[in-house]
Image 1: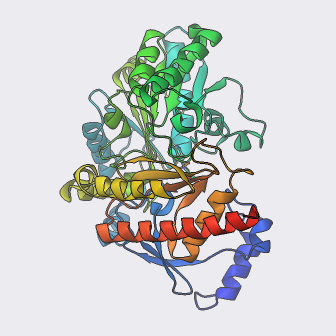
Image 2: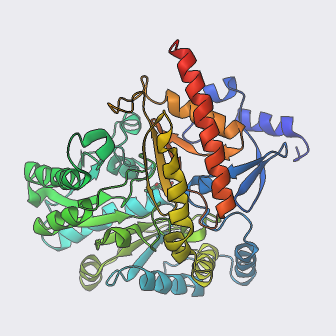
Image 3: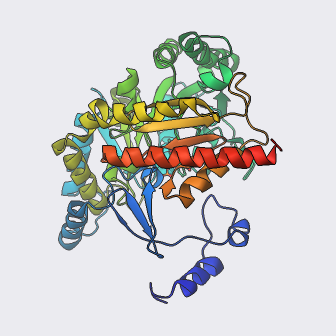
Length: 459
Ligand code: PXG
């Protein structure tokens, strides 16, 4: 089986590969997998040679695009110097310690201690364990419950999927586990009614206080949220939301966790989403763009309260992964940060390409399928509705989104559909011309989907 033998390759995939987040039966009935053979800049290339603009940065991760040979060179050099060593038995490696120091310098003051893992899911699992240890050490062993939000995604392990609020995920594996609760997300367009965004932001935040009081503050360990909810639909909170969440967490002595797996490393125009929204978490989850997606790496960044309690109390932290602080992934993380800094990419997202992308995206508001356009920096969503005046969603939910997605793909653009919101998070290095191409294809996809939907409705 070689790259020249596409049929054998697809056959191997069909017989032996169980795909994540996929209906593995329908997949083959619907024509099977597409083989991505290579990539260049912001484009992926299928084995047929077809080039597709990746409006989704792989899976929210390929910040620097696909052609950064510096990252490959750093990985290769590190593999030849020290391909692996563990960080368990009083050992460290140069890239591991150096990356911990870089992350501590970039994150808000006080968040200075870094634990490494391989995925966002593992990092969030780690946080659950860590927070439980923290409250036990603080002699508040009843503080165990985590509060998350409906629609949110924090990972796929049993515990991180319990933190998340996706009902379809909870249906599988009898989730959530005990000790997890959820509140409404700040989704003004869907739930805001007649309230202004700012009024609604405060109301959505106060759902946290209501839940804390219902459970009893002495039972609530932490609240977790993404600054902007990504996979759940790019839910951009009103400005009033996070300051109120922070106030409520402090008032009730509930730890505040910012899951920055999607928002981190420049996506929103600051290094981290919590900086964009002006709050200081006790703990942060980092992943994805930390290596521009070139290798799997995640990190938990721990603020002074939790870090000092855990460290000063002494005793072993009986938790870790074989590849925690892997020298090759950490070297690639360091190089990613170097490039982001040297090329002033985060500033560019804030001052130049981000505002340009948002302005062009908002031009789609005039389309008859588009109820709301929302976003900041290089993250955005276009929400489709059946009736703009009444914000009535399509029924059944999801069909319109898939129609737009499929038309865009056929015309050379990848974007993602969550319910009927089209999500975009292109590589941070995207050019204005490539943004124009995203918008040209998206408008075409919307026009074609509108025709399909009109036919189905018999219009
Ligand atoms: N937190 C957030 C906010 C995420 O978006 C995770 C944690 C888990 O990371 P790992 O590395 O364990 O996957 C994520 C992951 C999608 C999609 O379709 C999004 C993610 C993963 C898979 C699919 O948007 N986000």
